[in-house]
Length: 449
Image (cartoon, rainbow, N blue to C red; front, side):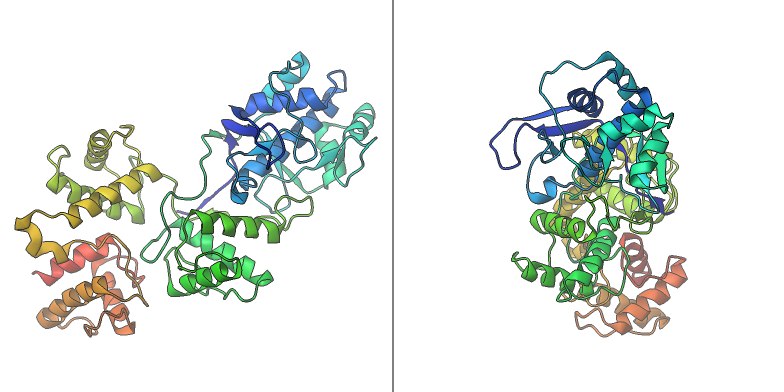
């Protein structure tokens, strides 16, 4: 089921105590305490309550926009925001905070606003309105409006427009960097691939040398690889077609720039762009396409590891047996044994699986070609893994003559794709033409009947 990646409130924020390029101290503080410090540094505690609330929400939004869009991290820095008002907001280390402001921040720190149909926290730029003038909120002007009886919502709409949407009691989250922690390349599938396609397609509007990606799906397709190579060439990166950390954050930086995410007149991130196909983690009771993949990897690992019980599990639902296996795997690999499969567990599970396949005991070597190759196979790919697939399809052709056919050439061509789709229909799977662990397992079993 699709989900919208709405912003959350970071539990902590890392502040650079100086200019971005300055060799200054970084400190990590709670987001709540950060806002209390900024508000106490920039506002007067005796201002009207609604003026204070409007300003505090503008400060919250400003900081959230920086964090949400990884403004500094996408520029290669290891912090979220600076302490200087000429770049960001005023933060003074170890300063005391006003009691009135502290209470208001406790009330508001997990509130933010967006604009129109945009998803990201609106870049609520502001200035004092006396010495410095700007297009955003005037701090002293907000005092006048509050004295006229306007609420904090009315004050914010006065400066930023009537189409503001307020989100209250947003959840707190340990924000992590968006880079998944591993290279995104041929054979990878997931929301991070869909995100790359959407961002590169938007970038291509400003940089037409980067070709449009026609298939906006979760699979790493040939046209995505071509687009990545063109992007890397345009921005003087190593032209590999592989998205490492440097390429990921360069894409993020250029995407933010062309959409003017950190600008009061931002094009913004739409609901469609923030839509994810898969949940950020899998847990007991969940259903969906990833369950059968999780089951495949866990059973393969359990077969060779006595510390993990080999149990029969459902391909469709995260059941009791699957949870038992997940917890055992987590314990065996020094992870939090909570039975929840997040990105860290996925990466470790695939890593352990790959090690098993690469170092199969001698007595299992004859079955080596029957193990899922650890990457998705789809139209346009070439290589030994495709040959292995085609050999399995050939065995099915000989025995059943129930699929269109196959030529063993190492090229995932249209005939191979049609045969895979035909089998997926037979197995009751989504007919994507893509080989995932569940489809691979069923093809292996059918080929050996």
